[in-house]
Amino acid sequence: MTKKVVLACVECGSRNYSTMSNKEAERLQLKKHCKTCSAHTIHRETK
Image (cartoon, rainbow, N blue to C red; front, top):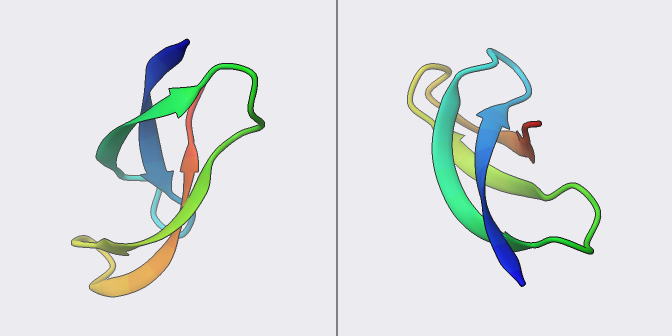
């Protein structure tokens, strides 16, 4: 079963991306481009 999750930038905290994630998995971390920081940073799944 999958659920929709929102990814937030670790540096500035802006919520830029949304994706689907497996419920049983741990919190998702992806390296994505942040428009606010103008750099590739780690984005983590928010609660």
